Image (cartoon, rainbow, N blue to C red; front, side, top):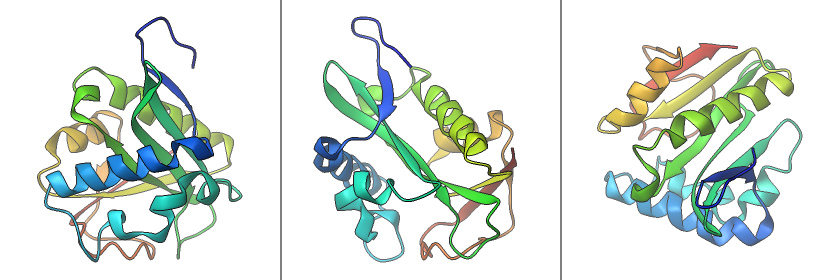
Length: 165
C-alpha cells in the first residue's frame, strides 16, 4: 500500500478526506445521469464517509495521487442480508484515475479487507452505462445476479453482482 513518487497511493480514509470523497461521488454519479433519489449520491453517509466507515466491519479507502484524493471505495455489511455478506460500496474515480489499473488495485484492496473482516460473499450494485466498472467486476470473478439483494435503498441501480470470497 506504499507509493513511489507520482504513483497513486491507496490508504484508509481520514476525516480531512470527507469533502473530496463526497465531491467525487456526486460528480461521477451525475456524469452517468445518476443523481436524485435511489442513488448512492443521496445517501446520508456521503458527507461523513470517514465516520460512517468507522463502524464495525466497515472500511473505506481513498486513492491519493500527489496529495490529492482522486477516488475511493469501501466495504460494509450489506443491510438486510446475512452477517457474512458485505457490499462493495461507493467505488468511484475521477477521469484521471481511470484506465490505469487503479480500479483493479482498489478492488483487490477492498476484497482483501472484506476477507479479513470475516465476510464470505461480496455484493455490489451498479448502473447500465458503467461498462468499464462492469468489466472490472467480471474480471475479478463477480457474477451478475437477476435482481437486487439486501436493503440498500438504491432502486436506481439496475445491475447487481456477487462474488464468493
